View 1 (tube, rainbow, N blue to C red):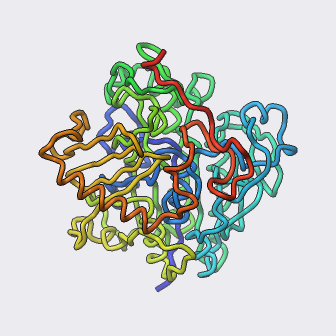
View 2: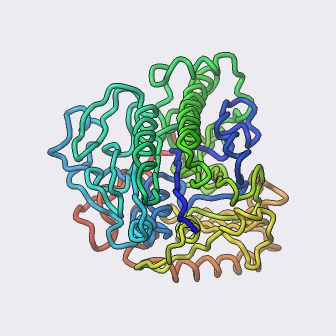
Length: 486
């Protein structure tokens, strides 16, 4: 069978709840809704770490942070300080030297490139050394670090960092469209990663296009809860209550709808080029997001200690391949970003040959038959610094090494995770069994030198490599101050 093309669409900080097809009645996502109608939407898909850089590295390498070594969002290692403008230095103050954090591992793009694929990146990288193409990518259009302004951003193309006129979502979409036009004329199959910066903050009125903001002028924003701040809240992203809350939600939703428009253009271009039936289209996000859920503004580092609520770790996931995947279907099985590597290799017909042992499993069968029952116990593992999670369909255990506080939730009875049962004597046996299962799993798939439990991860950024390969004394950002202490 001919190898399929792959169009991989990645959002930045988009909650699983932020689509019309997920039940959000406030938001406009017509093209993501169209993609869901064409393919399979997964209701229980999870990131590997609820913050951007670790999650992205886990997608790419099929491993957990304590294996790939990106333990927090990268606030260093992306750029050579000498190459940055004065303005760039203001929002990238910890950049010193470029670091290829995942150079000790095999990425699925390495495997695809070896299997004959042309691999291209259009959009955010944020896994170190942003100037240099890595892991089999032959086309490289990206940004310097992680965060970026939406209008007139600095982008990297052909090894040059420069300011571009326009809106970053449109610029990424245009570059991806050019790739589709070029690749459609070539014989080799292509893998195109389109990594939008949307809907990551900023969300101010001046940061987004009026045509999308106007869609939400009269919105009451009832699809997200309006709760008092969580006592562990730390302000790692914009936040607000009352009218300020509505202003920020308007910006967040406008960013998503602008991204949705570009996704629609890419889907239309596949049709125009006559390659839609030969192309797998996948949409997901690097991590979840709270915009009021649990009283939190932010993701895993929206609190200190970091949280593992489903609103932080659950992500949207939609996949379409006409004539091969189910159409207009929903899959409720549990899968995670570390399952993407074996799945894409399976679909591309490429053997999974990696330097590292990978924990994931292909879910290709569920793309054809979404109601298929799994023959193995399905569990999901997450980590963020010293915080680790194991979750199955019924229960979730969150351990904060070494002292806690720890959490245990009965998800089928308490889907909003409001009643912590960790100290319930009736649950002790179950908690011990799940803890043992989690610790054995991490023992098998982690690198002891990169064990996040012994690193000073705070949720405020990572400056250099973890473990024995670190070149700086201070490797992580300062300890945040929860709102309860103010």
